[in-house]
Amino acid sequence: MENKELNKMGVKPILPLLLSMSLPIVFSMFIQSLYNMVDSYFVSLISEKAFRAVSLSFPIQQIIISCGVGIGVGVNSFCSRKLGEGKFKEANYGVINSLIIVCFTAILFFIFGVFFTRPIFKLFTSDIEVYEMGIVYLSIVCIFSFTCLLQISQEKTIQSTGRMIVPMISQLAGSILNIILDPILIFGYFGFPAMGIKGAAVATIFGQSVGGFICIIYLIFNNSEIRLNFKEFKYNHHITKAILNVGFPATLMQSITAFLTMALNRVLMPISEVAVSVLGVYYKIQTFVFLPTYGITQAILPVIGYNYGARKKSRIDETLKIGSLMALVLMVIGTLVFQIFPSKLMSIFNPTPEMLEIGTIALKIISISFIPATITVVSATFFQALGKGNYSLFVSVLRQFAIILPVAKLMSYIGLNYVWTAYPIAETIAAIVCIILGKKLYKEKISIIP
Image 1 (tube, rainbow, N blue to C red):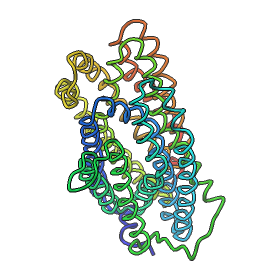
Image 2: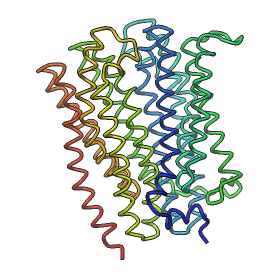
Image 3: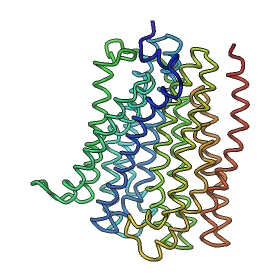
């Protein structure tokens, strides 16, 4: 018999269901966005070079996060479908196998942190001080990547059961601890040594450790649908493959932003090095728009997956409709804020007059892409919920690399301000493709449900 939490995904009215599931995630995503801003602020107080070192580390750090998200999306999709089918033991095995993937991935990043951070940084800076600080920061983040991978993946595992409060607590606890530890470890308050940029990295690891610990303890002792029991450990190649079929494309999809950032930096650098800094500021600020939107889609994913497994077509339709509207509202609000207050947003980072001028124009142009991005973000979640991670990957490559990069390069020959138009152009084309693929998948998978 289904328990109350699972049953709500099959019977509770969709709007209250999505609100109850998404609001905790949206709130925790907001805290995560705030943490990103505060963390960057404290690092900038060390020096401009310290901020640059962390900024150059960001793409690799984003790849680690992307791996955690990919594993989490894979196990979320797998578990929600199995729970909807009533196959609880298979869902349990899915969690165990996801932890194996986490450990293997962490080993790869450990090796990277020990042997490859120096060669990587040599590609991006000739400044010795930036180089040395970057090595310190990135090495710590990579060597202890297990904490990040564990926290993110297991938050999404718990979300697959319809419970959103525990992942929110995990996010809150980790982010708040990180915010508290940042100034203490960076500047040496309360008797702690001043560790500088190393302190920022250590604070991050501690925060992620606490968040991951909360999730694991909950899965072992409190969760009734999926319970970690290592005595019943059973590696299953087919389950691992099912997780990776959705998770690996999701990882690549998330990682594209990191590669895009590096590539766009190469496009912008010959025009204006200040524009490179503006791009970095944009990616910090836009998290306040996109992370809460991703919070809504994280609520949509298990609901669609569960009802697809339970063969409830009308609830899938309603989830898509209401979830899309909720995401659109956030994107519209984000667009308005970027259009009305671009200079105030830039001022958070104490910009030079040139940086403020370039950034004000950039934020206005780029934010035009937010509304069509609603279609691509929700569509990617729909594809993942039905086990079509390859569709999500295709769309993400299209919008975040295949279109935006050549358009940006072409526009760079006209002028800097035209480079920013690559964002709305790419999102609009990708949205059209999503509509076409979505209709095709809906006809194949959903329309046939009686």
